[in-house]
Amino acid sequence: MRGTTIGGEGSRRRPPSGPGRTRPAGRRDGSRPAGGPPRALRLGPHHWFAERLLAVVSGCRPVHSLLGHTVGPAYQQLVGLADEGPLRDRLRPVIRQCGRFTPGPGVIEAFARIATGDRVTAMAFRLEQGQDLRWRCAAIEMHSPRP
Image (cartoon, rainbow, N blue to C red; front, side, top):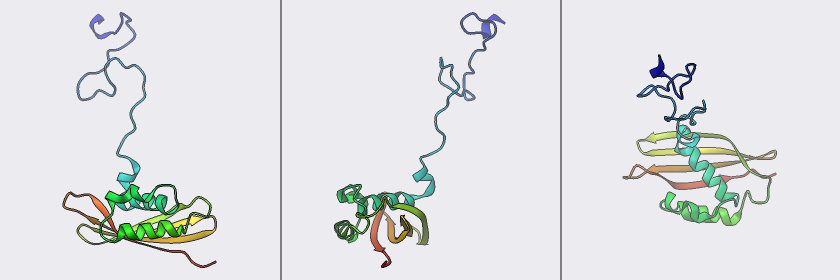
C-alpha cells in the first residue's frame, strides 16, 4: 500500500502514531531516553543526603550548599564537622553502605559507612519531613575509629 510509506520507498514503514509510539515523529534512529527516575530518587532520600553530607564533610562542596536542607542544630553540627575536616586529608571517600530505620511517619534515622582506603568512618543522621513534604537533615554525627 502506497499510503503507509515514508518518502516514496515501498520498503519503509510509517512510524506508529498514538499511545504505542516509541519515538518523536520524524525521528528515525532507535535510541530511547533513559528510563525511570534518577538513581538517588529510586534509592530514597537517605542516599541523597548521605552523598551530599559526605561531599560537604570531605571538602568537595561548601557547607552552605545544604543550608536549605537542614533544620535545627544540624547546620551548626555540619559546620563543625566541615571545620574539623575528618575526611579532608585522606583519599577520596566513598559510601560503601547506606541504610535507614523509620521510627515513625515523616522521620528517617540513617547511617552510612564511608571508606577511604582501608579506613572506615561511620556517619549517622536524622531526616525529618516537613509540611511541604521535603526532607531535611535534623542531626548529623560522625565517628572515625582511631588508627
